[in-house]
Length: 74
Image 1 (cartoon, rainbow, N blue to C red):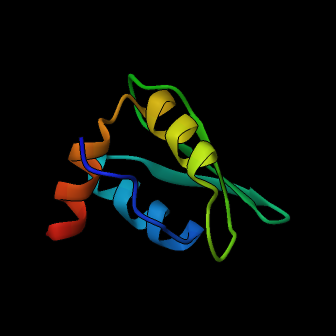
Image 2 (cartoon, helix red, strand yellow; image 1 turned 30 degrees about the vertical axis):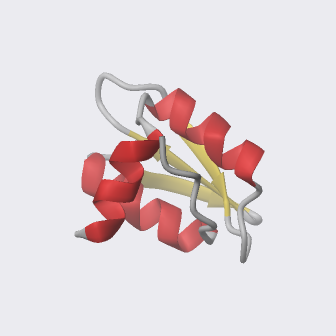
């Protein structure tokens, strides 16, 4: 398994949108995304997302870290 990359909140949102998530609302520095058939996700709009937070978001979105790295290569 490749190590988790360091991503900003905006970069993570762009990657999640490639998977089918859509921004629903933003409150302060947190953006809520939804996708039909999947759990809604909240992403903090930070310059760097903590690796533990990123791992939790990926777990909720049912995305493997290797798939995230593959999405970044596109």
